[in-house]
Length: 186
Image (cartoon, rainbow, N blue to C red; front, side, top):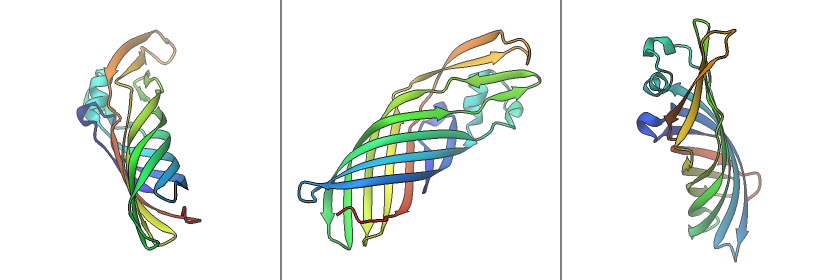
């Protein structure tokens, strides 16, 4: 598991979160490369009130009940072993994959404000520091190719006449964390 922090500035829906990850690594070419498959499930806290206010044209005081966001990212990374031994190994390399982001809706005075769920291609870079045979720490930056999202709001709970808007978004995210290895990858 790990911690994450948004690097999208004012166009980021959330400021930080907690991630749970599952990773499977395979050594390649005499253990000079690591092919890694990861799934990061991110629970995003601390909504960016400026972004939500701009997105729905609401006052920040109306956004007290914005819930938790969820992000699921599945990636593949080909990393180079920069330095390594059985006691300490450093790897780094690019990652690519797919991302699904679910942002919470806002229900305010009978009106519902909601956002499409973007599914997109993601890219980034990851580095691992393996310590011994069963422990490692990692740092990762990833972003999605999504630059705009569609937002909707109904006028009342029974009238679903919607107002549709395009809103800029940036899903740039830095994750740092630690994990336990069930089995060494080398």
